[in-house]
Amino acid sequence: MSDFSEPPQTAAPKRRGRRSTEEIRSLILDAARCVFAERGYAGATTRQIADVAKVAPPLIFNNFGSKATLFAEAVIAPFNERFSQFLAVSDELPPDREQRSAQFVHALYPFLRDHADLLLALVKSTGEMEMAPVHGLDDYFARAVARMRSQYELAGLRFDVAPELLVRYSFGMLAGAVLFRDWFFPDQPPDPQTAESTLARLLFKAAEPQAPDGA
Image 1 (cartoon, rainbow, N blue to C red):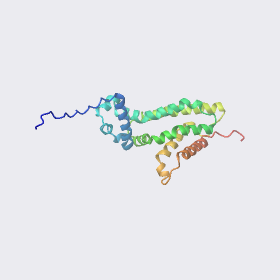
Image 2: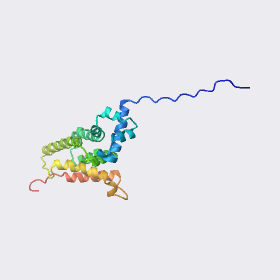
Image 3: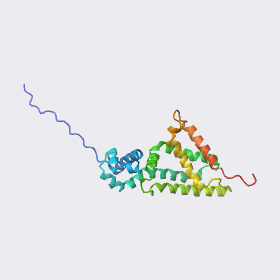
Image 4: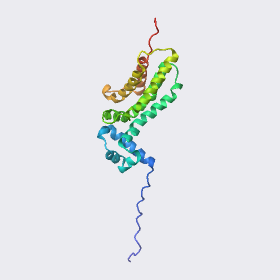
C-alpha cells in the first residue's frame, strides 16, 4: 500500500537575532586589543580587526570613526580608567608609606599582569602613530605627581627622587616585570604574592625621602 502522506517538513533554521550596538562594540574592542598586541598600530588593519571580531568592516568606522580612535578606546582607555579608580581612593589609603606602596602595587600590578596585551600594544605601537592618544597616560602621571607633592609637603618631607621621574619609573618597573617575566625567570617565575611584595618593597625604598638635616 502506497503512503501518500506528506513528508515531514524540516524546520527552517532560526535566524540569528540582531546584535546590539553594545555587543558589536565589545567584539570590536576585544579584537582590536588582540590585533594591536600582535601587530602594533601600523601593522594592524581595520579589516583584520573586523575579521577577528566577525563583523563587517564598516561597523568599525560607524562605531569608532577611525583606527586611531579605536586604538585609544581599546588600549589607552582601560589604563586611564584603572588609574583614575586608584587616584579616586588614594586619599583613603593608610598614611604609612610602606603600606601605601603595597596598596599601589596591589592595585596596579595584577591589572597589568592580567592585561599584558594592552602593554604589548603600547610597546609595539610606539613611534607608529600620532602620540596624542598615548599621552593619555600623562593625565595619570600629572595627577600622581601633584598628589605626592601634597602628601610630602603635609608631612614635612623632601623628595630624594624627583616625583616626575618616580611615578613614571614606578609604572615602568611594574610594566617591565610583566613584559619581561619570561626573560627574567625562564625556569620558574615567583608566585604572584612574592612578586607583589618584592615590587612593593622596591617602590617603598625608591620613594624614601631625604634624611633630615643633621641626621
